[in-house]
Length: 92
Image 1 (tube, rainbow, N blue to C red):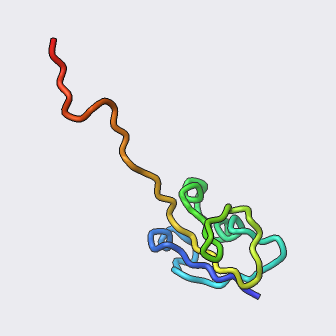
Image 2 (image 1 turned 90 degrees about the vertical axis):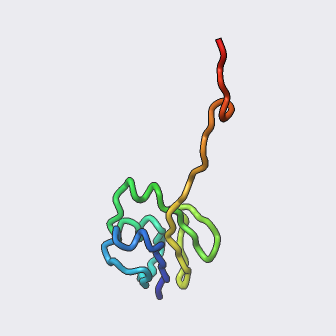
């Protein structure tokens, strides 16, 4: 009984295993949080990781089932914030 785990390439060097994919033994009550802790990701790193279970975005505390496929991705947030209009000039 196992869970298939894939890590986004930028997470590999931060993980304990240093592997892009691994099999984790399933047990009743296991969550992605258990995997993050076993791979020794820092709390700061954990906050930036998005969990996808069987191709559906999930929460780190969602229970996993035997045979699940878990992807650990970098949760990218971004965009630019602009204040006012670009190129505006003020005249006095």
